[in-house]
Length: 88
Image: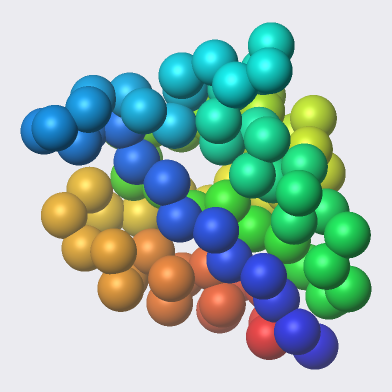
């Protein structure tokens, strides 16, 4: 199975919470997931740090993505968790 993994976080030092900034009436991260919805794959996953889950969960659900959370300071671990949980 093929999985699409999109990674997002909210703690950017240059532009905090940029993934939640509005773009055409919706958040930037929602617009990205919306654009990726046409990609054929078995699983679509939004990977984020555990402390961002509350902000991203409703957006991921609405866009048809599964939310996978992982360690705040380890992006690779979040990708690995997403792949393991999807069975890709």
